Image 1 (cartoon, rainbow, N blue to C red):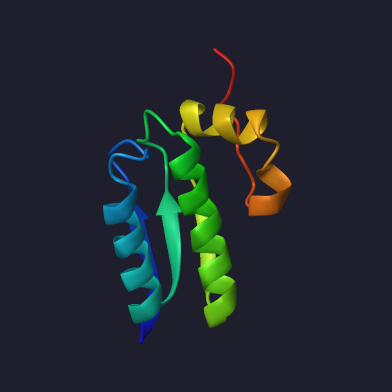
Image 2: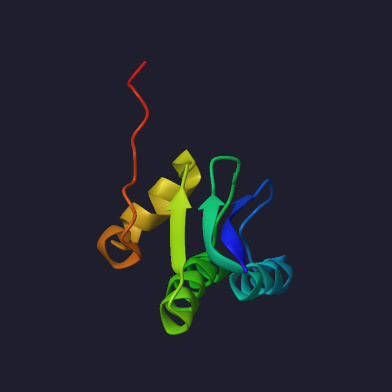
Length: 99
């Protein structure tokens, strides 16, 4: 088993690609000590995307591994804020400096 697997998502986090992303996350957790998921390039997230983030956290906990979500894009931050999920996901949501 290797260290933390870093994954940069460069696509939408929606129902249209949820199955593919779920398989990728499950495989990464199975093969590594944990996953760091970078969402800085995600331009859209729907309820299926939220379910994927919750799946990542729950599956990592079940396996006794780490799961971090980093680089929250504005769209991801907006969805997490709207659903009041920041505390449940447990990762710091860093706000960019104001322009």
